[in-house]
Length: 289
Figure 1 (cartoon, rainbow, N blue to C red):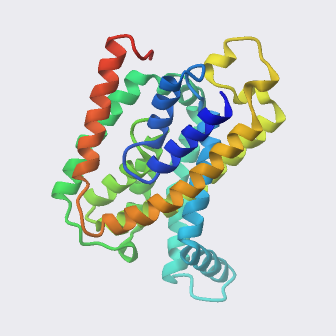
Figure 2 (spheres, rainbow, N blue to C red; figure 1 turned 60 degrees about the vertical axis):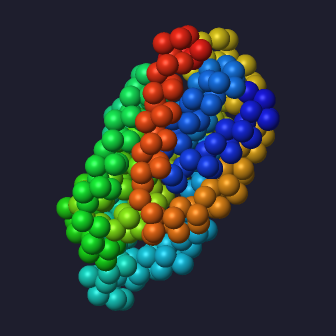
């Protein structure tokens, strides 16, 4: 992968991470179309996601720092343990458990089987329909303050579905929130806060592995060949991560304003259209699963 292609993938990551369209699916598809040697790889995808999660941290800085502060104060008995923000901190921790456990148990499938473009295409269509149903019939009354432990667990299970490219981390968790009756903005806000521990953890772990052994971080196609130092290029990945951060910060600001007034229907139509297009390209041999 050259530097320009890496920047393009960073742009794709930034544009799609916060929209319910699956950034990992788009990085996978665009990587194939760019001819970067095939699948850019789960490691590359996880690392550049650090850029978009930094965007979340910047955008929700006050929320994040206040939640952390209240959580620690409650933990050491300085404030009541049922403080709403301290409680929210615990719920984010609880909601992060499913994706951590499943991420470890399914690591091999995540890096190989789940990245098949057939699976990506099907998940884009199926969860596009799921998002439409949730948005169409959800009550949209509850706020983040109404979050219960049971709901936090369901959000966590929904987030873990994003281990399969095409589902979408935000799409899965927002759909779950809408089904449970949460407002669009509340479902999105909790979705983004919930993603931070898992994405930072995964990205930093993959970054550590990549620095320790560059061969491990190569694309699936590259790993079928003799390992070479250029398999993991830190400059390319850093460039992609910076682009993902800058673009992601703009997109998250747009998205939070958009969903306060509009439905998810345009994203549903887009998901189904892209999924069907990928299927056609696979059948015609333009793309390879």
